[in-house]
Length: 100
Image 1: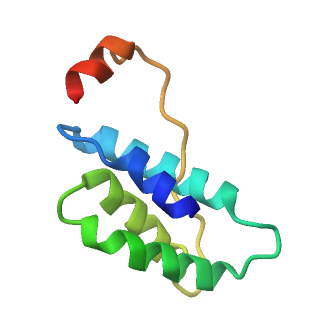
Image 2 (image 1 turned 180 degrees about the horizontal axis):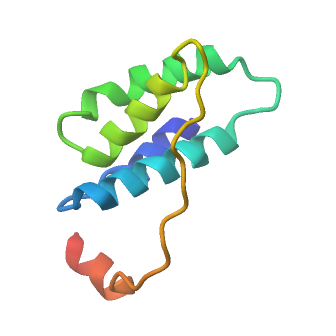
Image 3 (image 1 turned 60 degrees about the vertical axis):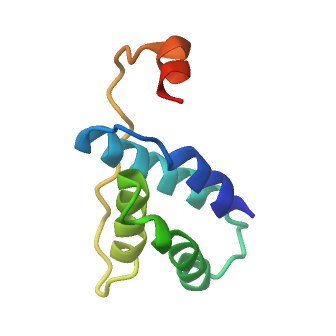
């Protein structure tokens, strides 16, 4: 299930609000990219949100992901605020090991 892999990547502790928003956007783009070309977006978005909503209160990046999923379904459709993170050093492998 592609949503499980995406959520696993979003669940990190001690994120700043900006980093959580960046990860939520990246997670949304990753999830969207894994959908089959003939997928029913509304149905898939509903499944993704239902799967992720139990983590909204505990994981800020998942909350950002869910906000994007909800926003993508509002009518009339509006462009989503999506951007790749700005390039900067974040500590690399050592930082990831220390975060566990």
